[in-house]
Image (cartoon, rainbow, N blue to C red; front, side, top):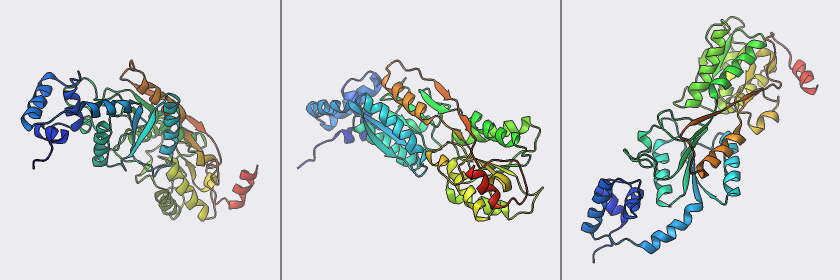
Amino acid sequence: MNRRVTLRNVAEEVGVTVATASMALRAHPRISSATTARILEAAERLGYIYNRAAANLRQTRSSLVAVCVSDLSNPVFNEFLVHLEDELRAHGKQVFLGIARDDLTLQRQFLQTALEQGVGGLLLLAVRGTTRAELSGLWPEGQPKPLVPTVLFSRALDDVALPQFINDDVEAGRLAAQCLIDHGHRRLAWVGGGQQTSTARNRQAGAELAIAAAGLPPPELLHGPTLRQFGLEVAHQLLARPEAPERPTGAICFSDLIAFGLVAGIMQSNTDPASSLSVIGCDDMEEARFSYPPLTTIAVDKASIGRLAAQSLLDPDARPEQVLLPPRLVLRATVGRPRTDAPLSHFLHHFST
C-alpha cells in the first residue's frame, strides 16, 4: 500500500522549504510565479492532495508569534523577553519561544519549525555569525520580504533590510571607557567580547574611540566567553601581576555577567574593586544593583527595545530601518580613582555610606 504523499515530500522534490511550498499552494503573492509553477507541477506529479481544512485550521494560529533568542545562559536576555512578551500579550498575541544556544543550525531549525507552525510573525535575536544567506529559509532569495513579518532586536545585522531595535553599543563602550578615564585611569583593559556579533564589535570599538581620544595607549584586550567564570579568571590573572606599569587599573567589561566574576575575584583578594582594579560592566542587569558591591555599569534600555520591537512587528507599515536606543551610565561602587593596596575595610566604609 502506497504511503500518503506529504507536503514535505513536495518541498523536497522541488528543493524549497515546507513553508514556501505551503504558501505557493495558497497562491501567496510573496512566492514567485516560477517557483509556484514548479511546486504545483511537483504536487500534481507526486499525487499530493492539499488539505484545505487543515490549512484553514492552521490560519487560526496567526496570534502566535515566534521569538528566537540566541542564548538564555546570560540572564540579560530574559529581561528582554519579559518586555517583549508583555507588549505582545497586551495585543492578544502568544509567544512561541526558541533558544538557539548561539548555534546557527539550531536557529535555522527553529525558524523552519516556526514557519511550519503558521506563526504570525518573528522576533529574532540572531546568533553570532548570522547573515542574510543564513536566513534563506525564512527569506528566500529574490523575495522582497520574509515569509512572515520579522523584526530584529538587541543584535544588528547590517546586510538585512528589516526593522531592527538595537542598543547604541558604540556609545555604550565609549561611556564605559570615559567613566574610567574621568576617574583618573590611564591603563585600561577590555574584558570579554571578541565574538562575531554587532554587540561585541561595537562596544569594543566605542571604548577604543574614547581611549584614543584621550591620548591613552590602546586597552589590553582580554577576549573570552560571556561567563562569570571568565571574569573570575581574569581577575586572578591581573592581580597576580606586579603593579604599574604591568597591571591595568581599570577594566571595561563587555557585559555585567563578566563584571560580576571580575569583582568576585577582586574581593577574594581582600581588596576592593574601586581601588585595586576599577570595574565597569554593560547591560545594567537587575542583579547589578543588588550585587556586592553594587556594580557600576552602562544601562541598556531593555524595556524600550522589547516594547518597540514588538510594536513594530504588529505594525504593517513598519520601516525596515535600524533604530538605536541610547544607553546611560549608572555609577555605583566598583569604580574609583586608582590607588594602591587599599584595604577591604576602606571599601566596606564606602559601601555603608
